[in-house]
Length: 360
Image (cartoon, rainbow, N blue to C red; front, side, top):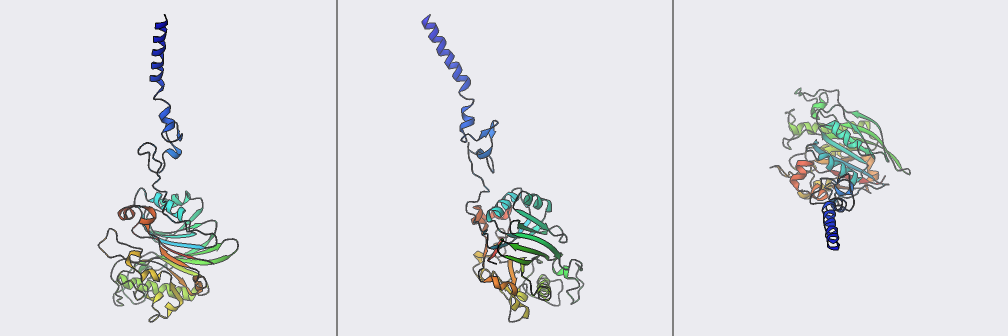
């Protein structure tokens, strides 16, 4: 009887082990107790799935990305975001970068899907947005931090002018054509940290692409000619209407060819030897323009064209009061994200952001 009882006990424990040994233990142990409901949730599976049993790597964490936002500083970033969103992961990359950088003001070009931009910003509780109404399917978007920035109004300049080449020398009557049917988006904002307050006109642009850097007054359809005329229109508008205001002009100027202050696209803002208007403006990123190509905003990662610095932030004379405390830089997306140049180009953008920071 004793032998039978022992055998029964041994069999009982073998059966118990077979039933319970594979049930609860791996579920609660593979990710430190973060598994609920039979699957990985919370800390056990974030940003890209559980690869390798408990991998908690978030591909959008960006440990190399810099936090730029300071409470007593104004941070302004311009970014051509290339047909946003060009990839299924674009919104995740962009959203997490914007929140990590924590800048006060972002101005985007090439918003292909307004609804996708809106849904992204709606998931960012600290930010609000304004989109243009006139630039077609590659539009503008202003995204700003609610804590410091108040949006007052916007005006899309020359939106009521013709977008066709009439062949004459009066480029103002078809100003929209000079701007490639992307009328400049002039935004009137107020920035305040509770101690200091400043009003600001932020004029966002996206000039005509391509061509060369040769201005031909007799060829009204030439890309460089149109860009040059766009700059003449903008400098005149600011000098005649915003001379006593704080003005920032920013965006993709598409100044192809020689990267210098003599480039016809930029010259009305930068070439003081030949344009009186240039003395009233400053190209904040001139050191980048005149620096090594490795620091340019457009690197041509998947292009046969040479790198070029196409994205700029220009301030008017009234803003020079704040310029002594300023810094300008191109944000290196491969460095900040830790992904390859090709992945940056294919999943985020072919342009890198340009930032201007100053103390009001």
